[in-house]
Image (cartoon, one colour):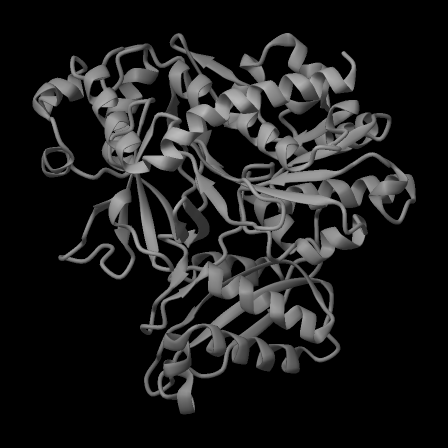
Length: 511
């Protein structure tokens, strides 16, 4: 199909879509409340709907008072029943697919329900919106002259008791129309390979022959793949391989620790980076502006949002609010009710609103991934901003990192201990540690107060990780693949202690 015609079709779709978006941009809170009523009406005759008498819930306050907030563990028994083929438990249409995720903190697998409605009206709708927003902002785009290099999970779908489970990416690929494969690379066969290392080399050999115009995937794993592409081809940057490449759609983890490395292998001021915010539970927000990484919260994908201010999270006076009550620059835990039957579900992410007209956000971290052993309340957003500043000041580059407390013992004060794998080492690791500590204090006033005159916290400690340490840890824990993530911050020393022990052993990574 000629490119002008493709862009014309996309422009037509965009105009049509913008008419729909005007509603939630102009009346966001009304759209959300109407959506809540639709979800309640749709599920009123399910087991859960009858249990909480959805049919008599006519406003948000009743919804909030009657239905409890749930974690995955609270849903597990119901989800297992539906995986065994039982229907109409928490959503009226049959749940055929379950997105398998080990999460970031638990080895135990989670099976997130994916309904036909959530697949079509959330995940696929978001993909279309993302492309249309990008094309609207970049009228001279040649995106459709080539293919998108997609990097998803590494497991195929497995069938059991009439239902299927696997990575969300496998579910999406398995249900795409046949023609969609022609605009993507690698092929479905390679994309769904189970063995990550075999799959990685297969992707390299297949994609270097293609005209790649865009990238899509998690930054950490995509960087591994792209460096392998450069090593295999002997080129210095990606434009020597794919001269029409113009945009990278990324999500899953913060882009901050990786942006400098991407700019080295994609040395062009015209190359675009577009961020998305999605998970197994749904697709939540999309970057809608070229020069801003703020994400537009999408309010008509079948997801009703609530938020818990992080300064009350988990306390006896925990406060839950609807979208209409959020404030700019406050951290909130996200609670969702979805068209796949998750009711008031804690997804474990935290966000910060940068705007409320329209509602734009930045992902600030995870509810479980912070360090607050001494009242310092260090979140991932703080850590990654400090690391970005420190690497630039010390002319160094980081591959991966994690941090945990050194707990007080006897008269010894506490501290934070880091494990950092460098791609480019700083000349002086002690100086790096000093600058990082100072940057953390400048960014986080609670950390600064605890560090003042070593009142509670001593200066941080850095372990220099050997090459491939984090990759080896993921491999050892059967977590290789595009949807698995390194635990960045933790109040527990479990991950750090495992990495310290593994750091003593020579790398066993496949090369």
